[in-house]
Length: 309
Image (cartoon, rainbow, N blue to C red; front, top):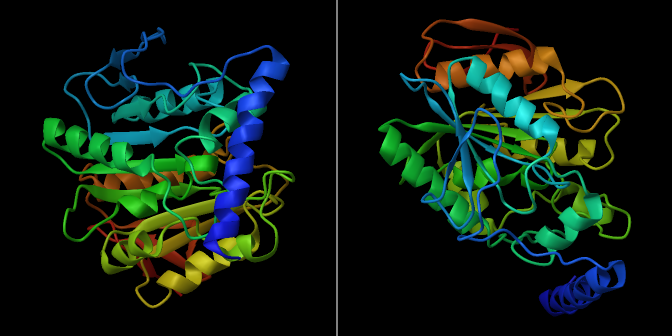
C-alpha cells in the first residue's frame, strides 16, 4: 500500500464525511477551544490546558494525575463513570473532550468528527495529528502537578499512550493501552489484512516508545475483532526483550474493557499499576490477570514488571 493511495482514500473519506452530515441533517465538527464547557456533575471544566475543554475530577489534596482519553463513540457515560472510579481511588483525573459532547454515544457522528479530522484511522504506521495537543496537555498537567502522570487510552485512542512515553522527556510514567483499534478498515469497522498487526503509530513514535524504560499495560477481550489478537501479539513481540509490556486477555466477546464492558478485576490491576508507577504505593504486588510474555508476573516496589514463573 503506497502513501499516495492512502491519501486518495483519505481524501475520499473526508469528502464522504463532509456530505454525510448534510444528508443526515446534522452538523459534525470537532471540539475546539472557545466552545462552551458543558457541565458534568462533580467535574471541573478547564479551558486552558488544550484546544478542547478538559474535565478534572479529584479532591484536595490532589492525588497523582491520570489522563483518560475517551473512545470512538465519544465521551460516553461509561467513560465518565470510569473517570469517577479512578478519582475515587484518590487520583486526580483529567479527561479532554477530544470531539463531540459529554455523554455522547454516537458511533457514526464520533467517526466523522474524529477520523475525518485529527485521527489517522485507516492509514498504517501513521501519526495522528491529535497526538500533538495531547502531548502538550500531558506536559501541562505534569508541570502544574509537579509530578509524573499516567495515561489511559481506549479504543480509538487505545494506542496513544504508547506514543507519549519518551526517554528524553519523561512526563508519562505509566501507559495503559485498552483495546487499541487503530488502524482499521472504515467500511467494516475493524482491522483486516496487514492492519491487524499494525500498531497505528509512526515509526518515530514507536521508536521513542521502545527507547523509553516506562512499563506498559495492554488489554483486550479475546472475542474482540476490533482489537484482534494479532495486534496484541505484535505489541508483545516489540517489547519482549525489554520485559516492559504486560498484557491482560479477558475471556468473552466484549470490547470496552474498562468502560461499557467494565471488568472489575482488570480495573483493580490498572489501579495497582498506576499506584506503583506514580508513587502512591511502594510494595511488591502479585498480578492475577496480567502476564509478562505469557508468564505470571508481579509489580516490583518500583512499579516494574517481573516474571514469577
